[in-house]
Image (tube, rainbow, N blue to C red; front, side, top):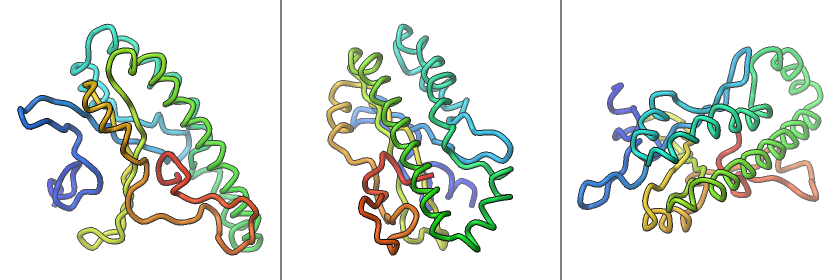
Length: 201
């Protein structure tokens, strides 16, 4: 069961961590994205996967990844979800002031979207594109897979110019989508998953 549901398994959501071309060359790596924390905001990435990505890149590029992921990415995590103390006020707000809860969630996701898009635009323009690589945030939410509802979010990193072109042409969001907040409040400018760089956190 664990192997089946692990990244790239038959019951897993999203692509495998490592993708190869027909000749067996690694052309893309997909780092899992983490957005939820209990008492502090998550750093957003897996340490082991980042180490493998660095090993697959030229030294001059790999040496700069720590700054982009450990320092600059963390700034985008300020608008991700925290279990505590958020649940203390979010649950009562959801029960008794539902429209306010939806509006606050929408505004939080808008801020997260702006920060995340700036981060990936900057890492592409300043580091990856000049070296023939490309990064895009992506996510997938199927209806049901192996009896489970699941959403997978990841950083897709193309390691060759050819794969960079392929990735650049792909969309950010795959699978089932929904409104952020609520679709029934008559908003003039509603927010939808399809407008985002991945399914909203």
